[in-house]
Structure formats: structure tokens, C-alpha cells
Length: 213
Ligand SMILES: [Zn+2]
Ligand SMILES: [Zn+2]
Image 1 (cartoon, rainbow, N blue to C red):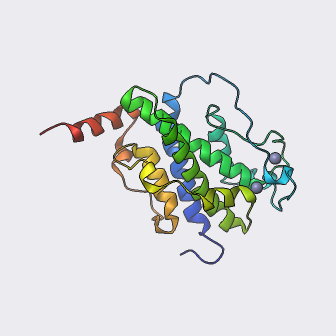
Image 2 (tube, protein in one colour):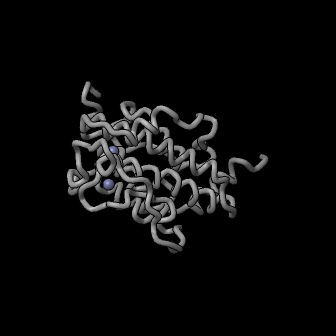
């Protein structure tokens, strides 16, 4: 059960493991070669006036580090602090990485299922929702907070702007799991997605469900 300090570590590992599993198996093989270098985002809160207690060196060797590695594989969606050098705010880095995963996955899924680029508004909503939901769990677990987090949590995207699990299954499941992480079972998440070996598989399932019987 989650206590005052947030989720227990096992649940957090389970949730992060789910991201790694989906990314490595299903998303990464479908990523186009990165066309440009990652753009810099706004400075993290440690490199602005306010400072931050928890620096990103705390992420090294922690389960959260995988999130940064995955975000680095999504350069078109990742915008981290220009001073990214081991002295950034950990919560800001986790938040920007989660945003890259949310919008990067939505882009990859949309491309695979519809063969056309998604609306920019969809990517923005997925990125902001992932940032606030994942960031909130991180902040609670580490008893920290920062300006970036409050920016995401005061103005979350409207639920109807987000894709459901029937629309973009991987992104939809990611957002759903992190929206209510305390409900995550501590055994592997059971889902039809576990039987898919690529985005093409998922597309075929979605198409067969839509086909008139
Ligand atoms: Zn920084
Ligand atoms: Zn911060």
C-alpha cells in the first residue's frame, strides 16, 4: 500500500519495468532514425533562481535512470535543461524524460497505425499528462518538489484530449497506469499487449476489432 511517502519501491519498479518492456520490444524497433539533435528545453529549476535539493546524480544507478535512457532515444521529443551536466534538478529531468516518452510513444503509435503524423495537440497532451503523472510519483517517493512539477500539475490536459487504450494502446496504458499507480498489481500487468511482438501486431488487433462482423 502507498503511505505518506508515496508508492512502495516494488510498485515503482514494476511501473518503470513496464515502460522499458514496451519501449525496447515494441516502440524502439519502429523509431525512425533521429533527424536532429535533441532541442534544449527551459533551464531546470536548479539552474534557475530557486534551486533544488535533489540533483540528478541521485538518478544514477536508480531504477529511474532507465527513463532518462529511453528519453534519449526519442530526441525529437526530448527537451532537457541546456546545462544538463549532473547538476540538474532530478525532478525536472524525470519530468522532461516522461514527457518525451508520452509524446514520443504517441507519435510512434500513431504513425504505425495510421501511416500519417498525429495532430501536434495530441502529442502535447500526451507529453504533459505523462510528465505530471510520472513526475508526481517521483516527487512523492523522494519527498521533493519543484517548479516544473507544479507547472504540470496545475494545468493538466483535459482527459478527452488523451488517447484511450483502444486508440493508442501503449500510450493509453502508460497514462492509465501512472494515473492511479497505487492500483498497479505487483505481478506482471496482464494485458493483450503482452502477446504482441511489434506495433504491426497491435495494428492488426485494432483493425480486427474495428472490422464489421
Ligand atoms: Zn539544469
Ligand atoms: Zn526541478
